[in-house]
Image 1 (cartoon, rainbow, N blue to C red):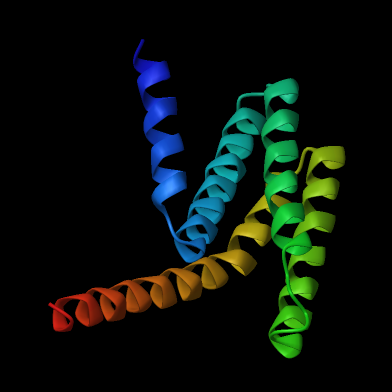
Image 2: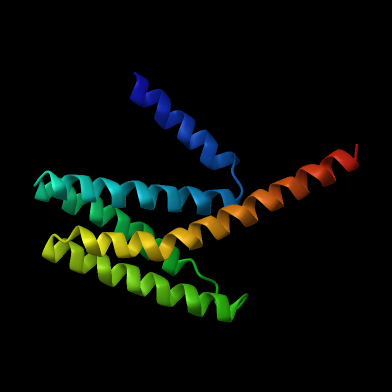
Length: 135
C-alpha cells in the first residue's frame, strides 16, 4: 500500500513540475542508481549492481538524447562530451566491476547537477516574485 501511494505521489509531482525540476529529478535518480551500484558492488552482488548501472546509463542516455543543439550549441557540445564520458565509464564499470569508474562519473556530473539545480531554484524564485507582483 505504501509503495502504491509513493508511486502516485511521484506521478503527481512529475505532472506538476516544470522541465527544470524534472531535469534535476533525473540527476537525483542518476546519483541514486550510481550509489546503489557501488553499494551492490561492495557487497559482491553482481546482478543488482549491473541493474543499477543499467538504470544510471539509461538516465544519462536520456539526458544526452534530450539535448537541443539548435538552442545552445556550445553548451550542448560540452554536455554531450560529458555524457559520452559518463556512458563510457558506466559501461566499463559494469564490465570490470570497478566502483572507481562510477566515482569518476559522480565527480564529473555532480557540478552539472548543482548548476542545473541552482538555475532551477533561481527561476522558481523569479516566477514566484513575478506572480506575487501581479496580484
